[in-house]
Image (tube, rainbow, N blue to C red):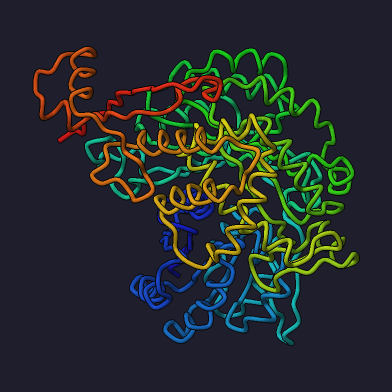
Length: 565
């Protein structure tokens, strides 16, 4: 029988580690799609491979579309056996087997050994699938009377070195000029050096299995060397908590630093409060462009943190984050919709995180996942959330639906003004003068009045909007002239402008432009010199740490990188 593993990814840049790992372990073929593709296109791609057994990898982001695909698979491949696995179907197996009569079985938990056994018994699978599946641990299926049966838990893989490298095509000679296999250009590479998590965060599915297993260091080094040799752009460690064993995780960091190729970025999800002194000291030596951290703060409300079974040592968390060097890109997370967190409390959590000066703030919304501790808690305490994936919270006893939608809009503003990295100088000034929560709260409220969030928005839109708000005195405690100068500076720093928008006062002097170019480097080619530079004049020194302290006629020559042909 021909087996086919199917992934439906959230976007083109993603790779599905699960189907690649299962394929490498069993030799079964896999195919990847995205949730943005038409269902008909996905069905056709599966049909053209003509499999006898179709197996879907499921998550909250693809559960809904896969639920639509499965019934149609049976129509175009009526004899096919359809199975699924992954956290979405795996932890809600009874729900999906009742909902989808075309779905024959669901694998629960780790899939490598389970799938291998199913593959070995494939000859008997079509004759009597119920009897065959009953003898294989880790499977939900229907018996002859249509009852849903679980065959029992399967033992976990203790020695992770049994798992082959998930990207064998990286070893292929069929690569492009950058050294990246043609089927993996512009992709994120996910990598797993451990399984399990010792923490019990109530909203997380990893809390359901506290047994942690590690890939041997020697094997990790071998795998990382492949990524480095092939110069892949981004490797994301999917370890539930990377920094568990200090000696081990520092050894991996040292290997990466000592063998780095100047190209590959490694992404780690860490619990910052548990970083050791040795780790913090080592990180001071890491150059830019090697590592980025995702740090789950979630809340600064200690009552909230205790309720969701997270460490409430926010003082240590903040201390350690402040000690991380600027060479490591820091992405900090907050979750809206947690216990005991109302809008006021969330605002304090927001300011707590912004005081740590993250490169990006990810404002997430609580998802009540099947099988988690939070699911039981939410049912008992009045939470309301989406019936179908992604199970996002609508309201809590502490936040109304209107509060949650307000935070959705505030998230858009944070992405536009902070996470984009475009308004750096304006944000720096605002952060010194007022609470970021107060700023974004006022900005979001006023933007809602102007119905900003119901239409598509480009980067240029946000410049016009904030200029309008500045001149409407939305922020009366701030100096309008300074803010306008900093906004103009952020705008012109983006690159050479063909045309300036209506709000922008371009104070240009061609002769001063020429003189400053000559003083800077001379002009060998006037046309190129002018094409890749700009002259601008400001009322304040916009490059100063506190530009508002001295009003002056400040002229600036901005030089832009020359584009390669």
